[in-house]
Length: 398
Image (tube, rainbow, N blue to C red):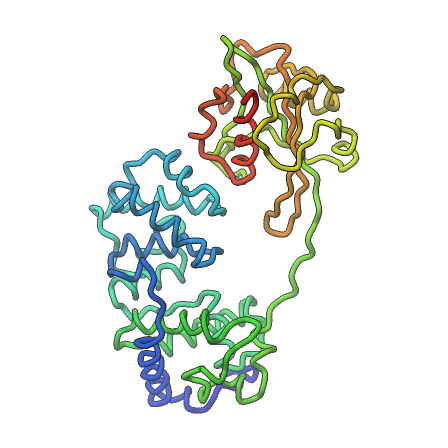
């Protein structure tokens, strides 16, 4: 081991590692979490759960997993589904590229593997959205292969066992963690062993308050021996949160007594690609401050039709021109506005969404733009903030 570790000598021997494995499997038999995707070794359910769990808590994933498997019970059903249906069910879970990769990977499993997941971590990594950890998880949980895993919980547990002084996110730190994971994974019930170390990290070896007195492997732990369990693992400082202002513009027209709203489908490479959304632009806070405050709502409410009766000043000329260039629509005055805040990675966003009447509709819409009837907005795949906006739009006139 490198000088940056203080791993207990017992873990440097096969007998010591075997002792840790036995302790972990014994603990897991009594204390392992009961989760819906652990009810079988179905690689489809395991794969689906692992993709959903990326950057997302178990508690948040469970209801999505249950709805998803009810709608798409196997990989063939998922591959055959329209992408919009997949995105709609994923709505609110975030990191929407996962849903798009899930759909692409399902298609490849059906078309190139006869509907069967490869029982090999290297082959699994060739599927979209599957990295080294996810491939190891599927290989061990579904096929009981001794594949190593390193994710948030095991990263923390292994760093403490090793007494690793390196930044765990650095290349050198990751190299040591993966080497240790390879050395420690059990050849006896490797799937259960990998589940056990994940559960120990989630329930006992927690980020801020590790319960060392309840840990079945504390005798092997370098951090515990040195009293560093609260200092490890070492991580880089978090990037500061940046505040930004964002303006969303929703053109509105009335056709045969029905309100319609002009939305665009997000392009490949954009955040929320493939989902419907309003025109958005980053702007200056003072531009939002200059909009008609009397029309603002801080959240949707049951009756907002009265906001359409008041006409206010125009949006900035540059914004009107951008909307015209992109959609072909010539806009009138702001008739209603909604304020929201949301966070994306290291950004805290103050969003103002405004509805504008259309003075002149384009004869034909550019690719990616479409009018949507008020009553149909609920069927569209949308981001979380997009859904908040359309929920608000659906209430006009009620």
